[in-house]
Every structure is written in structure tokens, then in C-alpha cells.
Image 1 (cartoon, rainbow, N blue to C red):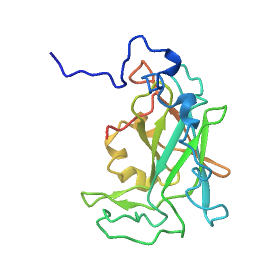
Image 2 (cartoon, one colour):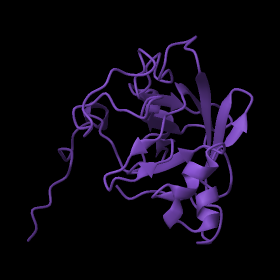
Image 3 (tube, rainbow, N blue to C red):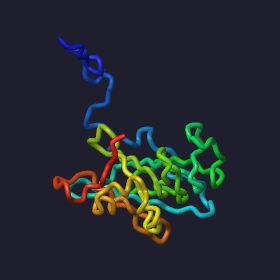
Image 4 (cartoon, rainbow, N blue to C red):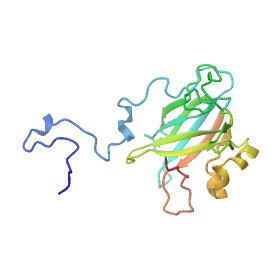
Length: 210
């Protein structure tokens, strides 16, 4: 016999209108993300008007290449100097560059499946093996039907040399590598994310196992 137990108490015969609600596998993020997850300045990694700020836009597509209009993304990144204001940074804590840089963003997709985060381009940063990682932004993808977030990265098209030597990109197949490099836009950079493709060599975005 196993120790299985339902996540929520089961009371046979009770009036269903009085049963407390609980999360089910299909009720992950999707249309329910608006219940407590977003906050007003979530997309603002830096305050409005910050010098050098850019817009990072991410459009999330499902396996049929249909935009997921109720997706949500989270971003986290180093600051413009390639530093983290965190005690676990082996170089020690550093004041953020620019000031009031938060390092973390959360944005909800619009009707086109596109989420927008206002931030600054991160600097290159040291990897654990002593190599230098190209500037990049980590991205978490949340959407309906996903029990676990998907994690990927955004690299920048104007960092050719650094991208070439980046310890992550340099270990990837060229076609997969290109899927992580954003396109420049008038206000920043954009990346399309495809969450599923039955063809292993198809359009699915590379995701990281953390």
C-alpha cells in the first residue's frame, strides 16, 4: 500500500457549492494568472525614463504556432555592469547599475501572445569555470497546461564575438543557437518562443533543465 493521499480533502456527500476550491493540473497559469500573480510595475525592471532602457518583447507560440494570449513570462538578469546585487555573487555585492535596477521582471501576454519588459541590456558576466558569459537574460515561461515553467535565454544579435565564445551557446547546434538570439527592434529586442514541436529539429525553442 502506498501513502497516497489526495491534495485536497474529499468529503463524500457534501454540497459541492460548499467544497473549497483547489488547483487542478489544468488550472496552472493560463487565464488564472490574473489572480494575484501580476503587479503594477512587474514589467519594469528599471523605472520609466532610465537612461539606456530597452524593451524586451517575447511572443509565446503553442505547438500549432498560435500565440498564447494568456501566457506570462518572468525575467532575471545581471545589471548593465554584469553584476548581481546578491550575496551569492562570488565577486561580492555591488550597487546596481543603473540605480534602482531590480533584476527581475514579470509580464503578462497581450492578445498577440506578446509580453514586454522594460530593462537595460545586461553586461557580460563571469561563469563558474572562469569563462565569460555573453550578455543574456534568463526567461521563465508560464502558460496553461504547464505544471512546470519553461526556462530559456535571450542573447543579443549585436554581441557576435561574445556569443561565439559563450560557454552555453558555443556548445549548441548552430540552428538551436540561433533560436536564442533576439532580433533588434526600434525600442529594444524581440524573441519568439515556440513551446512545442513534434519535429526534434523543428521550431521548438531550446529550454534549460534547471
